[in-house]
Image (tube, rainbow, N blue to C red; front, side, top):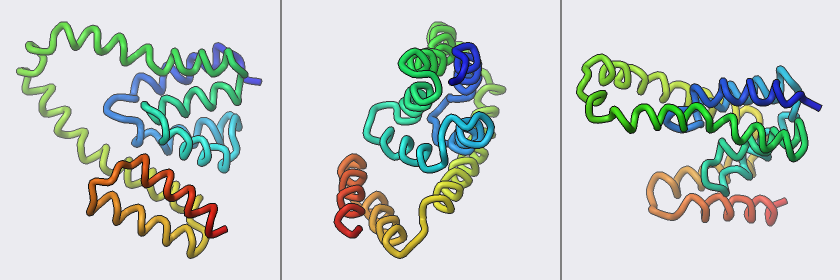
Length: 172
């Protein structure tokens, strides 16, 4: 069982870099939750990641799932609260000064420089998840169909996710 202080500190640190969406954090979350602290097995991590896609704020819900697995109800509560503390404080500060900050060239340039890194991290996360979860023809077919639907239609991601789960069950 993880200490609540450890959970709070880890999720506070994750929350500090949880800006702009959590998909870039998948490799970091995998390293911390599976490899470093062993709070989850790789399969549990992937299952939690898949289930979290059905909720608003998907990767934040993964924090709740992991916190619960590591420290029970209180652990889930601590992980959830502490992953949001940094962004709430940031939004209070930025929201108050937004009109002044958006005119600063340094801030614009910094954000422009972050974009390619974010794309690379998302690609790395997709690669790591694919290596871990694509083991046969069935998985590759579901991947191809899901990709095609996302790329060339306007069907809701929720429908695609639920459909993939149903298809995986039926093919099994």
